[in-house]
Length: 438
Image 1: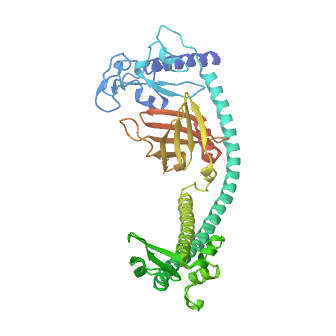
Image 2: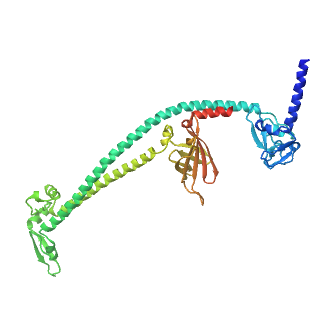
Image 3: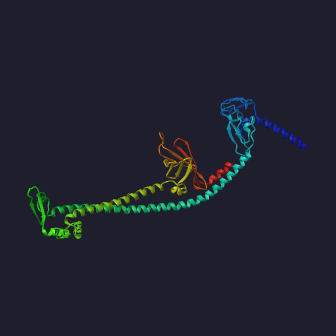
């Protein structure tokens, strides 16, 4: 008897609940308290009070569509999918009874011409498996991230040591530049002294040359036409030339210590007195060449220092976990294009013909405040035809390997990429995945 009484109460409770549920179809548990059957219903935006019988009567009375959660009457209404066994969610009320199964439990097609199978259990199991795999990937990624951080510390120290070495080399080269500049100036000064000495000490001076005078040790005579002067050397000198010997003119200086160093070098090497100017020019040229080499080396080292300082100023993460990406590029082929991402440098696109365009240069991190290292920005790329400059946003996602997973162009000249890497794995990533599942 008691059992029969309990069954009757259960039937009455189910009937009452069904009656109420039938009236408030498409409402979540958190909003169900607003849809308890009363004499009147207050629109959720507080704009209007209507009789409760007009709720879900397939006619839109409230401006916010809250009186028709279970029908398609209001264009701005929402239908709540319970989806027991899977994730509940809302769909626009316009999709209710439209012949397409939007809810995995099929409740959005309650009076449709089609019958929707309940797939929530299957989808829930699939999502649980994916979550488990994702958790494994995060755990493995965290282990690899620890190794990357340790490697990053080593790389960072090497870069610092390299910078110190370059700075020392730069200082040494700077001193050499100053030294070679002094040597060049000295050579130019000695050349000037040499030219003055040659002009003042040469017996065959400018005055004799202008008046047709004979050089020392030679004779002069006028030809029959009187149009030119013929200079003849002494027979002894001529004999030496005929025998293949070079006539050497002894300079008038006997005290070599009083001559400039360049002249002394020329005298010691038995260079002709009239060739001392050539020796001076060669000395200056040699000093200029040496100075140029040292200056080029100094400029090269300075450029390397600037580039290295720029790299060391980049933000590589809270624990410098992204340092390993400094000298690494990843590629992905999409259709006829090859995309290359070089983190902290640039993004490029190359077609099948080998033509390459820059899709952006490293700009910085643009992730939200709670996850700043989840997005990279590359801008100031090559300009599109009659359009803006290309730019790329790279989403950095936790993964067991470092590679590109997707490349898209959501709008003209704006590209999006997804980079998977262990460096992006975080503990809160794992916690967030578990929270979403729950």
